[in-house]
Every structure is written in structure tokens, then in C-alpha cells.
Image (cartoon, rainbow, N blue to C red; front, side, top):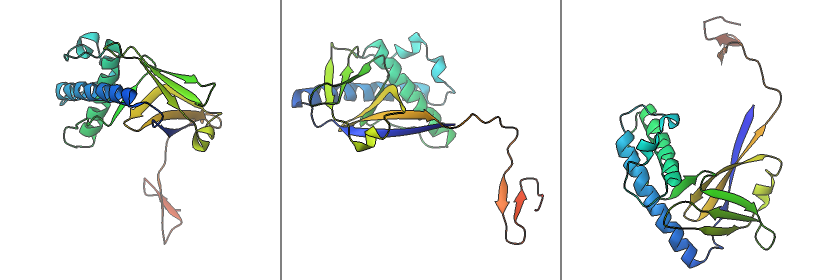
Length: 192
């Protein structure tokens, strides 16, 4: 069984100029995600179906790699909203999810434990973001860290995964209901 967890760390160690550049990138990313949402709404589209023609459709200075990230985020938002019967979603620019195509995670060797390197996003933007790890992040030291990073306006979020125990070979599932008159009943009405 796989267990997934996440941990956030602050972006407060960035300079004002880096913050301004990051916000410019996030604003354009949000605009492109919303363009994709308009395009995808009402369709049954999966991430694996995102062709180059689809991801290059919106006019933007974002690189092809960043547009792919934006398209994947839009597909997730549309799929989630449609499956739950919600209205068309809107991306408000509060976060962006970048894959290893656009962001690399490097270990620090000075005051900062982690450096996020954002590149290949367009407009010749290259950001080196200093981060400090903390106790919560260290609790995942023996977990596998995803190469995808979600960047919020004030923090970076890392995803961790671990495989626990042997993989179970499952047959069929049975649902149980604990009762008052009987210990439990199964989904097919059997009382025990």
C-alpha cells in the first residue's frame, strides 16, 4: 500500500525581485490554466490525451513545458468538478504545479537546506529559490520525494510517498454494517 503526504516550507527567504518575477509567472500560468479550463469544459479529456496541438493552443509567453503543466492542472480541475457535479472551476493564481520539466530540487550546502531551480518556463526566467527544511519535512527523510512541486504565493509544497507492507492480493470486497440486533450484516443481507 502506498501512503502519500505533503509538507510545505516558506518562500520568505526570496528577494523582492524574485517574488515579483515569481508572481508574474504565476499570474500568466493562471491565465493559461483558465484558458484550458474554457477549452476542456464539457469534454471527457485525460492527461494522456494532451497533444502538442492542444497545449500550444493558448497565446502565451510560457514555454511548451510550462503549458503542459498548466494543461495537466486544468484537466484535473475540470475532471474533479465534472465528476462531483460542480460548476466550471476557476484558477485564481494562488498556486502552480510544476513538474521536473520546469523545476529541479537541489540540496543546499550553506544556510539553506534546499534550492528550487525554476527554469525553462518562458521569458528567459530563471529563479533560484532558497528554502529551509524543518522538523515536519525531516520526518519524511526516508520517504521518496516527488519531483513535482506545488508553488504557492508564500510557500513551496513537496509531496512524499512510501510503500508500506506487502502488496495484498485482493479478491472481492465486502462491505459490512455493524448492527444492534446482529453483530454485523454484509452488503448482500447476510446477518451474523
